[in-house]
Length: 241
Image (cartoon, rainbow, N blue to C red; front, side):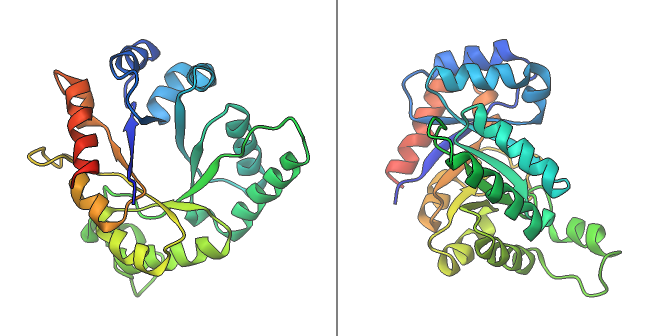
């Protein structure tokens, strides 16, 4: 199975993002635009990159009332992104609203291909201790992260979500239960690179072996003195695990 590389453009300004993309020209990469870069540069950068033929993953993790998220999803689609994220905690009605909005868009013969909606479960920065602290007030019996993620992903599949973002530590279990889902795995660190603030990490080769459809790498490339070489090494790990 092929595992794609998503590079997180976690930089504070468009010029730095464009400079990095220029250094990586020609490599098979999807670029992730998150909150920092989006708030600094706005939708115009996303539209510019999409217009240049770059594959864009808009990672704003939508979570609001259903109508608001549905309209945000429409705007993401209009920008030409390939995929975007929404929190599974938003629930069934929120994802149904997105699906309804997209169904209406399908009636437009001039509409572009619709982006994939990726459900976000438990962020990879959580460990079990941190997760218990967050959910302790909401329930007397706290489910472990792995069980929580499995429950949410099962619901997401029934809601029509095409893929999910999950930690590599839940990857094998989710792949076994839901082989049809597109699985995106953040918190990836090449061998020898520190985990930093990611609590649940894995190498590119390990994530590929466990069934990831795509991995997200950020700081190991952004902090590299030779980002193109670093990306080529990661791609090689994915091709030859």
